[in-house]
Length: 149
Image (tube, rainbow, N blue to C red):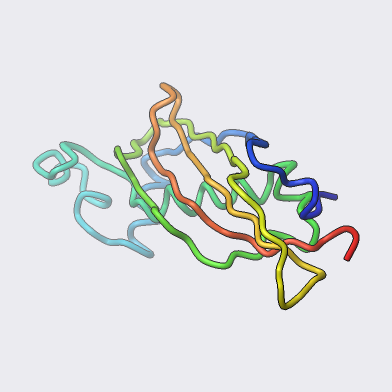
């Protein structure tokens, strides 16, 4: 298990990867973000994306799954209890055929003043495609149990 004390600034974790299909993009978009540049290949050509693009929320959801399934995600004491997200960005579109992998970097940690059994750890998540181009990033804080209260 990883406790608050183990999550020191600069520590990095990497996930497995996942490849996105056109069918995956369409299915997610039809259910959650049915804009034409996610659902209609022909119309998407004339969009700002110049072709079919996955919803940013799809990329974010896949990233969450990759992180939860990673050694890091399975090891954090108490699970990945989020406290909010800052600076979420999608600097380039995710396309059908892209293979995504995420990394998690520990930015900082602060022991809770009101609940001494816990600390807040600030993380930066970055998701890259097979060309190592960044397709999503965010900063988040998680609530983590302390090993020795």
